[in-house]
Length: 75
Image 1 (cartoon, helix red, strand yellow):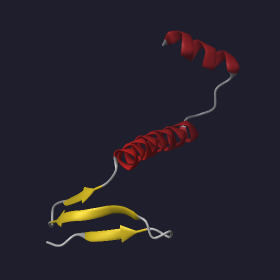
Image 2 (spheres, helix red, strand yellow; image 1 turned 180 degrees about the vertical axis):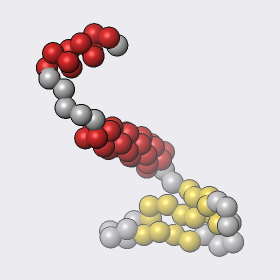
Image 3 (cartoon, one colour; image 1 turned 30 degrees about the vertical axis):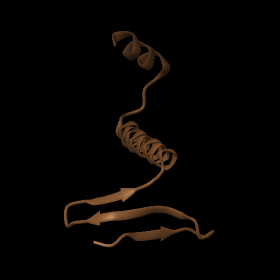
Image 4 (cartoon, one colour; image 1 turned 60 degrees about the vertical axis):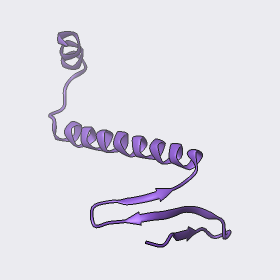
């Protein structure tokens, strides 16, 4: 399969698709871009965890300060 370049606004090649199958895509990119993508993926996962925990907090009943302290001490 031929290489399909992806070009950004400044006409610089960001990465190139080397191979595309129904199950996967093989791309070529710089180490710096790869590390940035890994960092963004970790940030996305953390944001999902935080959002899920915020929904759990909203569904729990309110506690008085004393109840909250006692719950934390029980942990």
